[in-house]
Image (tube, rainbow, N blue to C red):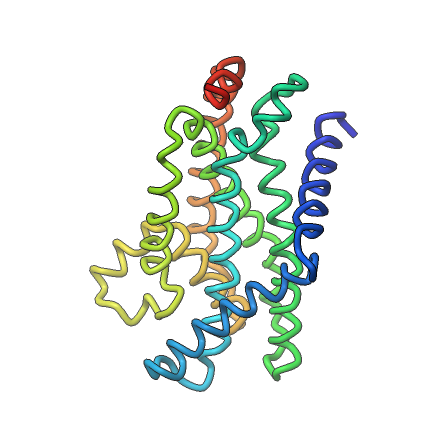
Length: 253
């Protein structure tokens, strides 16, 4: 294994252990916190606003689980360089390593919740479908999207620290534009075209198709998301390597 790959995994593991040690319930909060949030949304949209029908709980949880992975990874990844200012002052590391450290740490947390969601689907009576074998491709596509967005933001955040506030508020708007709480196919056709320009709306729609409806994913749409994401990763790597020696001065000034 390449030393840098081993370092990325070790740093992700160390960050998770440190995060778990800061709370009395430790790593149990990785499960409790998303469950509490999803319960709140279900009460608001399922009971108070009377949205959806009998299968709304599956519909909502599928959207929330996948959205939380994206949003939390984006927030954590965007600040990957700034949050490692102390490490940068002690030893030289290529700055393109920092976003993957944050992305992997958040993926491991997401994986626990996602596996619990799959278990919930199975034990609540939702049948296993052959379409579930495509889940690795869906997860890989979303991972590429997360890597592209997080790395691009991480590359510019040290120079524009106020961007953090825009990201936090922008993610709230993005969530409501991603069909987390409603079915995009119920919108007028013209509106659907605009909504599907949003990659997270397309991904959430495909997760629901695979997990709940037992349908196959929209391969061309996933291919477009993966291709554009790889271009974004390439652009991020260029910026991270170009300003590699400037980042320590930027975050410590």
